[in-house]
Image (cartoon, rainbow, N blue to C red; front, top):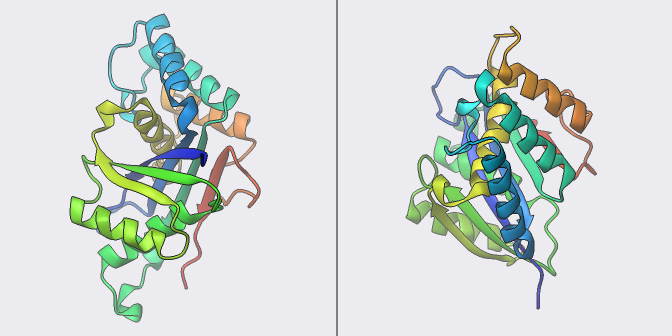
Length: 224
């Protein structure tokens, strides 16, 4: 039987005219047969800190810092992976290519998800129903992804509250987006988390990772 991976996608500052310079599409990937174990471990971390809410970047605060610190430690200690495609929106020139922003958006999702896919494996892709693609667009994305490889077994929307991995994607994505799109540099729980990500990943988060980077892979796409 083929090995299967689940991929949980989130996005930040992806609205065309939201006055944020960088648009990010990101995903957490985990082996399907490890999903239950990882979910149970994260639930244990939540119980340890009496944390009962949904995991998300906007929830990071001084009172919740130790929980998010332990969550980050868990991410870096396991085989869970994170990847993000980052776009400088000031360089998007859709008119030059006769396309609209939705078409560009599809192209960026393709760049996010097609990276280093193994044709001997299969993949399930989940997108946050709150602010991502409609069901029609999800079907189109699946069609586009499978044009080349045919390894994407399932592409669908889910609510973030249904998945710890989706919530983890929101947390990691939010941290990268905050580093790139916010000028605020004062010491805070959010800044401490960002510094911890830099230390553990050995990256500055403001440039592309090495192509071989597996744990936390950032791709600042060069638009032509």
